[in-house]
Image (tube, rainbow, N blue to C red; front, side, top):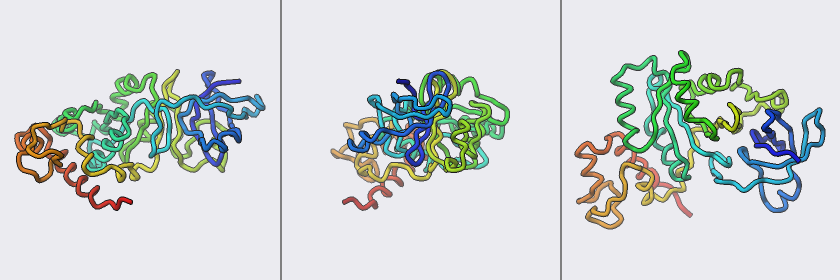
Length: 292
């Protein structure tokens, strides 16, 4: 029996990376289907090697998961890293805040990376840092083009499994290629096995960086897991709001009520205007979601 981590799963095939830096194409034993257990990217597994030359095997055991994300459907994530461009394109802060809320809701610590720092002036970088460091997230600035911030990024990722997400055009693929030279993000190549024609569809996949360090490319960034959050709970996922026991009304939504501490902090500059405005917009968006 051999141990490894699932780095990709497509059409019933699971690609398992071992500590020896080998990748095996595995099927899961039928017992998992009977017990309604679906192996996930990120799972630590035990498998039986069927053919050492072809590197094929059968997964026989899935280790207990430390966590399981619903969207994307992955397991054992230590942290998330969301990547936006500092400029060109200008960050979509509403989309960024939705991602942060989604990760907060799923209890995943999140860092923010602003790429293309070489194109931004100092005032722009200071504004971005001010906006998000106040809400409890580590903020990094990188330039994949000039390989700036590489060591700081590697330090953040070391010995962890990190879900990496971001919209198109921000340099996410370039950053991942900077961290793992030779990674072809267009074809999703990890090994020759995964380059077979039937396996080129974009799915969540783990990319081995070094030792116990993995990054997970998560496609489908626009589909974020926020719709199931009750609007009255949204305030719990904006760290800078903190509990506000002195709001005049119990269950204050921090949107329209008089005597609201959060609105007072916003008016006094203690909460970034953009963050508060996005909170209010998302609150009203969630109120429109039909719940059954």
